[in-house]
Image (cartoon, rainbow, N blue to C red; front, side):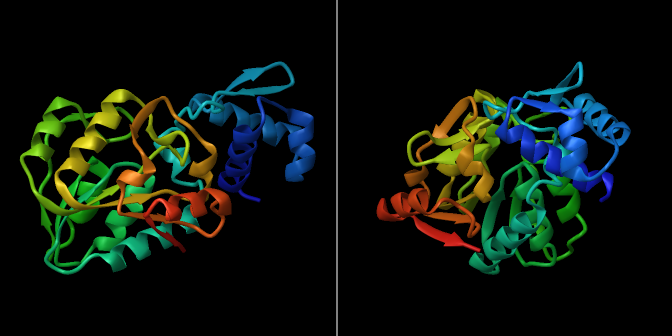
Length: 252
């Protein structure tokens, strides 16, 4: 098992429990305690956990956001399927806002080569789309969050409110029928709301793991979206509630 896969497994366990022991992880991952300590040190440097004697304590239990590089290795196949499904919902000629985050970046990659006008809310997505000759790229202003490259804040909100687009594709840190759609902080939540207010159609994207998380800042209700694109592992009861409320749910 390579280091990226091991660290992904550790991150999954961090989502479930407050404390992890080195000895237990070594057995679970079928590797040495030395290797586990090295992985825990790497995750501690990235801000996912705090090292303690004999193990580590999670920093992720209340929807705390993993660093961008670590989120990229979480649920990667699901994010790619979601991205392809979202791309299939868009027609050539549309104007589209693509949210920040790793799912937004996967969607940007899926849109390369499409005849679209795209407003990316992150520098990584803008970089990906800048290589697409057939795509018109409109990059909003805003403050770039360190380590994320997302564009947020009053300048980003003003840029978004000056536009009228066909579709806004919004990602999230957590979602549920009861807690709604949540984001890392109030600045990010406000930027997402500005993007939604500029669009005729809104699409929420989030893999199944997002249903078990609630972050600090409420963006809106799930029912404020026209479409939710998730994956088949999403909890059936929550999906049924959202569908019953009138949202078109696509599990891919």
